[in-house]
Each structure stands twice: as structure tokens, then as C-alpha cells.
Length: 235
Length: 251
Image (tube, rainbow over all chains, first blue to last red; front, top):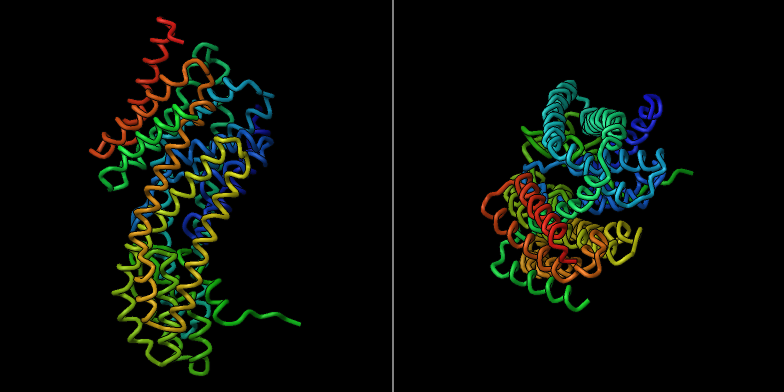
């Protein structure tokens, strides 16, 4: 993929991704920002909604239990889903990949590259929230001069902070991955690609394990094991 | 002809921006001030000085679950309308942590994973794009109904909304939802294996391996293993299983 095509695709992913990611904290919490929703939307935008949905389901399961409890900031699975689905579907569409093993190995490669970077996504979130403190100073200045209308509407400035930071983060990571991944992926021999495709199952398995470990009920794991084995042998 | 929503509805819509300027020092304070402003303007709009003072009083530290915040907002509206705004501010602070705990547990730890599990199950049984739709529709029917109901109850009955929420037994309901989530995820397993490892002859051993990996890492994660290490460990087990199958041709 050439630089111009990569940048255009990255701009598209960043624009829609940043807008939808507002739902995560700044607006609504209507679950539009969940990976299973945002990934197929970006996938459709980049030419393959089905692959986007597949990527979204895997990410959803991996972070199914990450919770914004109290003032805690969880890993940014929305940024992860936007970048991963955008990059994977763009590469799949532009190179005409239809073989499930190639799609699976590409997905594994993108996930393995992005997972260590999720802590950076969290840092961006923290940065925005720290930057939002400046709004408080501006609000107090407006209140001092007796201008409550403008003081209160400054609250919406936080939206721009969230939007801007997410846009830049998605744009940079998508552009880099779109330039690097096609070359990296083409260097991987077919036998290794088959192994990578097989390893893709670890993401949903660890996600389910994390969720079950977070439910503080004594017998929930036993119940899950019995039901899972029962369903597996019956269905 | 211009259309203007009734005040209560306008405040509710503004409350969807509750965390737009979330910050570490006073958290959601601006969200509350922004949402309730149309009422303050209606009540004290003629007196700029009083209006400014009122807005200032709403800018103290505030943090709760953004969905349950609708109840606190409703109570504030009720008390402001009855001329007891200051009382509401004092009381609100005590309610915040209570509703924060209940809301986080019920919505983030109960409804959200349950609806996500349902969506994932729909995907693995071949439901395709119904999966994200199920999450959006299912979650928001529950979320928006509760959010709007506690908001309206707060406006109408003030502090008595506490009794309504208590009557719903959300913590008990959350436990039931958690069991349902575990059931949904268990039901996902056979479909997940068939989708991700399409080797029909190996289905039963793969089921045992999959459930074993989940059980092992659920136990390890509970004891503090980071997710990244769990991914490495699970990857190693799957890799060993693949190598064993390659050498001994189990299936």
C-alpha cells in the first residue's frame, strides 16, 4: 500500500473512530463505542463489514470485563477496536485477501502489535482528563465576571479534547500499521500463518477467563465448566 | 415555528453529556452544573448575581455512576423547585458514593457483560450483524428505561426515589445476571470452537482443552496474573497442543 492510500484510509478510520469513541466517556454511554459495534461500522467503511465484525467480536470478548468502576480508567478497547478493524479490513480489501487463514494470521499479527500499546491508550485518556482541569479555571474566570451562561457551556469543550486526542491517536497508529503490516504479513511463511490463525482463539479464551475471575461468586467457575462441557458434548 | 422541548426533557438530554469534561480534581462537577443549568436559569434568570452564585454552588466535587446520576439530578431538580437547593447539594454528596457503587456493579459488571455475551453468542451461532444490534437494543432498552425512570421519580418524589431504587433490589438482580452471563458464555464455547478451529474430528478433545484453559486462567487471573501473561500462557498451551497433534496425528 502506498503512503497516500494509507493516509487516506487512516484519516477515514480516525474520523469515524474518534467520533464514535466519544460514547465511551464524554457522551451517552450507549455502547456504540463497544468493540462489537464500532469494529463492524469501521469495517463497513473500509470495505468489509464481515471481517470488521469478526475482529470486533474477538476484542469484545478479550475486554468483556474491563470496567470503569469509580474513578478507575480501564484499557481503551475502543481505540484498539477502531485501529485493529480499520487496519485489518483495509489490508484485506486492498489486497483482495479472502483466505480465512490469511485473515486470521493478519488479525493475530495486528492484535499482537497493538496489545502492548493499549497502556498508551489509557495514558491518552488520563492526559485528556488532566487537560480538562483547565476548563475549571476558565469556568471560574467567567463566573467572576458574572457570565454563568458561557461558564456552563465550557463543559462541552471537554468533548473537543476527547475527540482531538482520540483522532490523533487513531490516526498515527492506523497510518503506521497500514504502512508496516502488509509488508510484515507477506514475509510470514504459510506454515507460520496457519499457527498464528490457530492461536487466535487465545483472545476470547483469556477474555472469558478474566470475566469469570472477576465475578465474586464461589461456584460460578464450577457452573461455567459444567455448562460449557455439557453444551459442548450435547450440541 | 420553533419547537422547544419541555424543561425536564431538555435537562435529561443534557445529562447525556454528563462526563464531557471529566477531570481528576472535581470529576463530574461540570456535568451536573451543565445539566441543571436550564432550571437554574428559569428560577434565578432575573437575578444574574444569584444565578452565578447558584452555578458556583454546583461546581463542587461530584462523582457517581453516570447512569445513576440521573436519580441525583432528579432529586436536585425537585429540591431546587421547592427552594431547598442547598439541602440537595449536601445530601447529594452522600448519595453519590452509594449510587456509584450500585450503578457500577449493576450496569458495568452486570448488564454490560451480559449483553456483550449475548451479542457474541448471536455472532457465533451465525447471527452476523444482529450481534451488534442486539447489544445496542438490549442494553439501551434497560439502560435508558432505568435512567429516565429514576430521573422522573427523582423529580416527582425527591428523596423518596431512594426507596424506589432500593425496592428494585439491583444488587440481587446483578447476581442473577452474572449467573446468566456465565451460562451464555458456556453456551458460546461449542460455537466458538466450531468457528475458530473447524476440525470436526477433534471437537470433543478441543472442548476439554478450551474449557481447561479458561478454568486455569480464571483461577490464575483471580490470583493476580496480568492479562498479558495469561495470553502468553494460553498461547503456549495451544501451541503445544498444535505441535502434539502434528507429531502424533490425534485428529
